[in-house]
Length: 134
Image: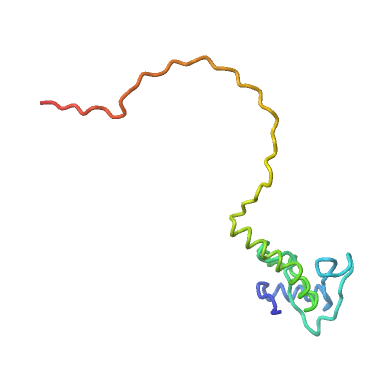
């Protein structure tokens, strides 16, 4: 899995400093027990992951960047990002239309009061006749 290049060099450096060179993967997003951090040593390999999928967030900030080990990044890509990206593509292909399975019945409407009949205007020609002067 190749590194993500959407993050600037400055953002990647800041994420690595923030991580103290330990994997920042936490919890079920990365296939770990809830609240548990991976903490693998990143000196053997580091990848920069969009916590919220880039295709959905377009956020390349430090808040959305995680310095993670290749194992955690691969798990999240296979189990979270790829299915979510496929869903995003399907929705954009369908024009974000949602299917309604059943029509929800509404409350019966009360009858509208009958309005007094208004006079019907007299018919007028659509085009005025051209006047010809001799």
